[in-house]
Length: 85
Image 1 (tube, rainbow, N blue to C red):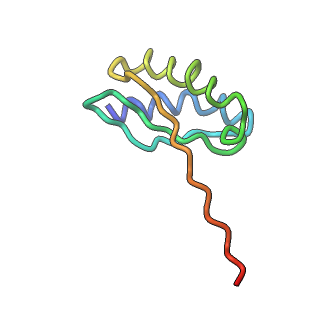
Image 2 (cartoon, rainbow, N blue to C red):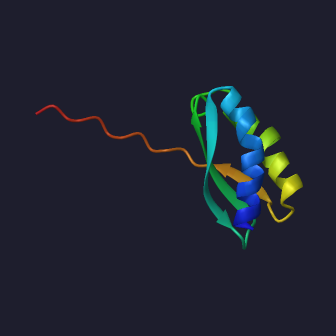
């Protein structure tokens, strides 16, 4: 299943890259059908990222890989700023 998801993401990637973004596959849970991805570049901070994820990425993945039930975005945790002593 992971290979199918990666192949489908490779078909989606050019559209995201055209807008200065990209997508990384983080995890595929074959038991639940949940795919975790991380939007990067311009997509990471875009106010439309959630819509892109649900209406674009999730829809296309479900069409290409019927085992996919849900796509979730993994947001990187911002690093803690250095403390001044």
